[in-house]
Length: 167
Image 1: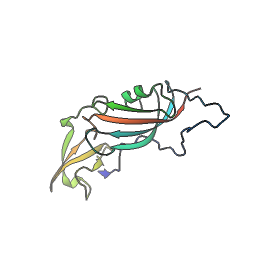
Image 2: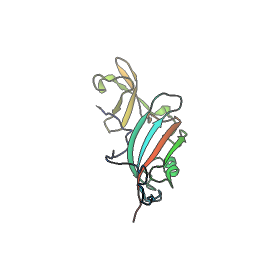
Image 3: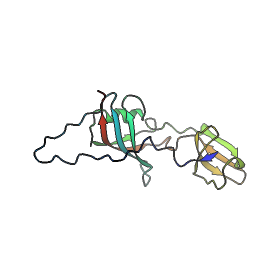
């Protein structure tokens, strides 16, 4: 197994994006396109778990509306939004990363883990699948194959940074 930093990050941090902050005198306001089927959408998001302090993950990502590259509930929620729009969305466990499944735990010998591993570390198994180390003893470990946010209600704050509609 090898250690990984994080697998929560959605693809592609983009640099140099700015939001229109106002219309200079003498210029007409720019009408921004709405998110529709096939739109290439760049957005900033922040995921928190109610009742817990802090942000679980915050990043910038890109997806194409209608291609199911983000959670279906998020894709539905952003439909019709424009550049600069923000929205807070609460997702149930089912809308987010699904219910927690106790059957997705595996017991392994400790010697199969990297040196210095601690409970809570996220690793990749031999097949490249992310796992969380949930229990650790001198001789064994329990690896959890559930997504770390499985079974949790989530609050997602989204800001649309850019919308490019197909020609």
